[in-house]
Image (tube, rainbow, N blue to C red; front, top):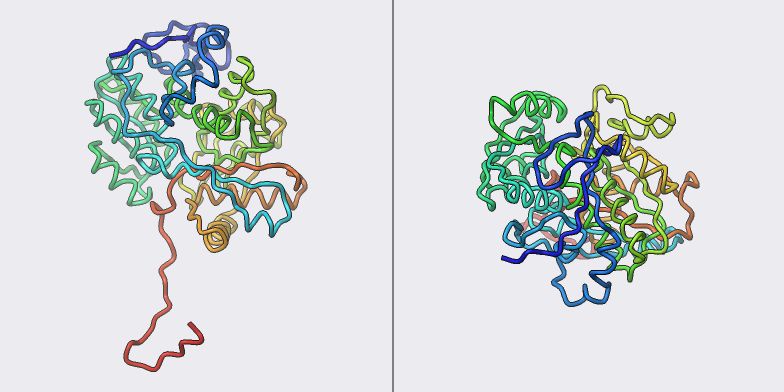
Amino acid sequence: MTEYPWFVSRLECGMTGEVLPAGVLHNLSPKGFPILVRYDLDGVRRSVTREALRERPQDMWRFRELLPVRRSDNIVSLGETWTPLVPLSRLQKKLGTAEILVKDEGRLPTGSFKTRGLAMAVSMAKELGVSKIAMPTNGNAGAALAAYATRAGIDSIVLCPDDTPVVNMAETALQGARLYRVNGLINDCGRIVGAGKEAGGWFDFSTLKEPYRIEGKKTMGLELAEQLGWDVPDVILYPTGGGTGLIGMWKAFNELEAIGWLTRKPRMIAVQATGCAPIVKAWQSGARHAELFANAHTIAAGIRVPAAIGDFLILDAVRESGGFAIAVDDEAILAARAEVGTEEGLLLCPEGAATWAAYTKALREGLIRRDERAMLFNCATGLKYPMPEPTAQLDKDAPIDYARL
């Protein structure tokens, strides 16, 4: 066991700034808002250098001075390696733009970026003595919770909408969680989790209802900056449902700037589907909070979140960065997945495909300039999602026109 240098200075309410004690369990703040982890950034600056990081394994735990886990034996890991930056060179040339990169989070252990947040949150749950966890999910978060909770020896219960992709439900159950399908949306699942936590004796792991999933998702920003030589792209397009990753990356960039490792920050672009776009609607109207989006629907299940408890944190990040929120329809998402797959050989998940559809739409509308370097996030492997069935056939017993194959 190693006791890491620990620089957590306090926890605070993301809305009011009320200071809360570190080292004890929290769900939401006393005022009912998400809690953020704050660090002694002067201490971090004195303790570690960018050069020192080069000697560490290329995984999400390398940034330990900016993470909340105090003891190495509480880290719950399945091998959270760096994820690659994949250039879309052909499409870039076709559009005549600056570099377009995809950060492919589908290479993580549970096949999605949910690995980062749940690995961190479960590690902290272990450190703080949690024995039973419940959470709602649209798919990938439940699979990640199941894997890491099982590895930690923590009991897990997962509730998902009954139209969640079958592969997500199957992997969640196979990795040790008790899975229940609910005849509703993720907010309905979340309501059940919240209502039953006392009777069920579980800790509520809903998005942003504990402080540490953000810290895991934050590593996307830390890692990205290091991969680019301590620089950032001009724009980051991020598929946004609960928005933990967007909030976490913006937090990472602010922390890196504060310790002198970054000299600029990117514009953050929240990408949603037209069938579920509460953040886009709030951004367009100038509201601080988003309204519940009625009759939410989209093929991109991961961003089908009708109400995000961290809506104000998402909107703050978008506005502070000079970014924007944009929605694309399901037809555009399917077309984007096909285009990137056939042009670049990269199979995106629907949520990742939404970022390509949003990028091309933003180019057309002048929201992104062609000379801006863009980073798109593919949040999960495309292999988890339904794909069109191939129909072309050959009859082995009939003449074959080889020239037409």
